[in-house]
Length: 339
Image (tube, rainbow, N blue to C red):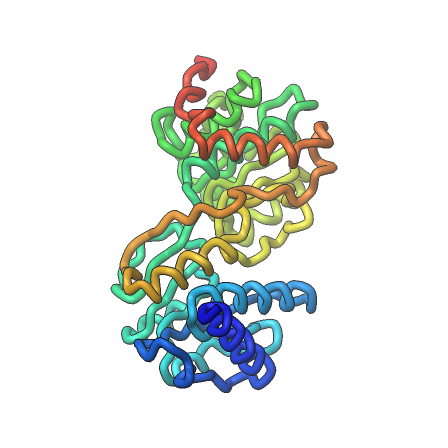
């Protein structure tokens, strides 16, 4: 009963936070009288429904762990720089591509920052990057690309910064997903430099292409997997190509051709909020590391109509469950590449 009362008090205080904006409760009246923790969540949610969902989730997590929390909406004009002026703030949770969040973390080493969806290695002791398991993302990307390309006799395209060799870990997982889907062909690698016209002589050949077509970008198949970041100039070539797109990055920002994105890594927000709150109050939060977050789903389907199988969402959910349980082992599907 006592715990229930504490949760109700926390929920009531959080309501005050969301209404008043900058006010943050101290929770001095709460028991036990140990250290109290405070978290600020930066959200890019634009619609009222999304913002309400974020509020509810933050309140539930805060009530469960006995901490204070508030949500800062960048779509409402919220500026992350104001977080530095909040007294007693312990942790900031935000997407890694939130404007000025990296600069804020560097300028305020006394604050902890949990940044969602950045695959680079953290260098600051007060920052940790939260990501999905990379190998799983690429395995599912290969599977989904093969499924979306099922009605094409051509292999699908994979856009890369530099050509990946057959033993490259990322490439092996793409191939594993493709083989799991039952395809035997080899995807065509197209370097970003070939798309934006910056490729030098002898550097623009892609796996599966012959010497005769090395100097011309070949966006084959119905789909392109974005394995590496794409330049602004390259987007124009992708636009002209007309392929559906599968993203493998975990950034929150929309890409220029977002309407063609049929699948992308799921948001880390819900799972990360629960995980980081638990670590914060237990004193086990540790920065300067990349942490894998196990959410309810790794990938989400943005456009089911791009797939021949109308039940692709259900299939994907079942496959993810089997991968997580070990019933499906992606490494076992790497073999079988056409030589």
